[in-house]
Image (cartoon, rainbow over all chains, first blue to last red; front, top):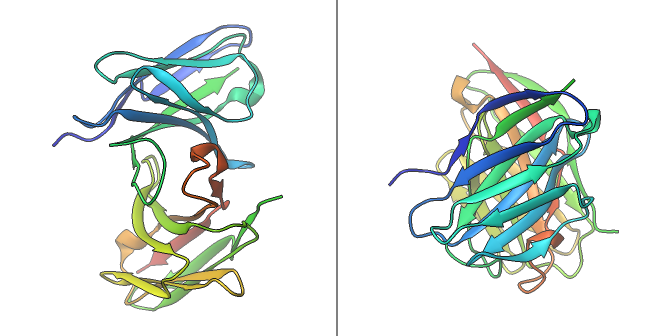
Length: 115
Length: 115
């Protein structure tokens, strides 16, 4: 079974631009979560989608948004990029919504650099 | 504020040696604690998960322990291999029903195994 895939793997943008990252979950998984990972802050939860609906949201500004399609693939968008948005963006999929001991499977991430 | 503290921040050991990584948390109430391994340029992979009623959980050469009274967990790696070089992240979930926004991540321990 194929794992979680993320595209692109690397991205370089300049301040003020916007960016869209894509995530394809493991086949059959309906929950997709997004995380930002930086050396200073570690992993931070952005949002979770299940059945095309945002079910959980972390403490990030409205410049960060996402959506999920009917095939469970998900995209996240960051508008008006800032230098501090430089990070590894990780997508994780799971069978169900968070709860109990469900395991998330992470993709390799998209490394975003904002110049 | 819920926090997860990991120590040491980084560690260098010789191949074949054992090591122990520490995770202290203040998350309450507590549901489960998970250890992840993250290779450079890859997403985290789950090693073990423990609920508050479990004291130890093994996965091959990895053994995690949990003391829910002192709110401490450790990850012991036996007979280290070069492939163990990675970051190890401790993640605590406060409750079955609070969703992923409540996950608290440690900043990780970077382990380097040298030949």
